[in-house]
Image (tube, rainbow, N blue to C red; front, side, top):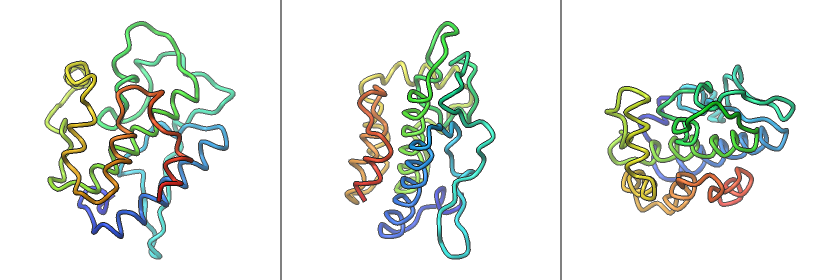
Length: 178
């Protein structure tokens, strides 16, 4: 978590993000969605390998989350579609996987950030975050893309933080970009 939140040089960022993308792509290929991707759940062992932790709220293909708005996860890392929904319609594993892509993008933006602060980090409640997402509907990615350096990785961040889940790439495609 410290490396993600405090940042590293571009080569190290690329190495860490590739490992995280491969790990998350594997989780998705096995039919699961993690649903709580955030720095606290990204561990780096003594050899420098990335380990994805805390599968306590993951969702399997055979399950359904009954209520999108009440779904688990840490709200500052949660995709807008998991926050900005009215009603109680459930969501599929595929939809939850696209929310994982969003959270990967947030972690990547923070890792590459010049400021080490998310654009919405001063927001303190999920209601305020919902309003922020609604306000920036088509420009959400531009806020996060201004955080990153010209490392060549910013394109990945922008793709992952697309407002529209169907426009986000799958994790396997992201892993292939490294």
